[in-house]
Length: 247
Picture 1 (tube, rainbow, N blue to C red):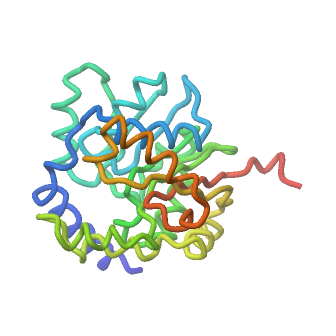
Picture 2 (tube, one colour):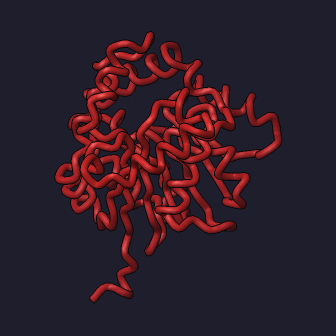
């Protein structure tokens, strides 16, 4: 994809996240959001003391919770508006380093800096998936991991959500159609990453998943193999293999 097309796409995304759905991105500590962080930590095998970059960190909703787990968290965000909001919410408590930059072309001084790169619902908003994952590979140290939480395109409720939720627009969300295993695997391979795992979880929207009975029922429903392929959330784990350990 040309740089001009990427710039046009990025301008749309800045406007979308800066003005349209900012209320839904506020940092919060709910069971729904806490589980998102817990699943990414589990799948990525993230350990206290590791340096982690949260790409598309927004207002810090997930970055703050990751920092509370003892991870050395930094953020990368395209929107200056959201970077400023994150710093306001941080208020000096976490003192996160946040870089306002485009994942399609990350600053060279960040190359090879991170044990892990994570992202929460960011991949499907990117203009060029393969080029973005190439940047992720550059950000990682050898042996590093990338973990992304994304919508499952096989789940019809996401399309309904876009249709009925004020502020959400298909033009900004249609990238979810690319979140198929075949597309992700090809993009990872072209970036020099190995797709190590793709798993799914979840069942309920936040207003149900935040209730104690909803959490218990959700775990039971997740265990039903018949609809495992349609569970709403996908967890992608990609690894940058250490060349010394390659066969």
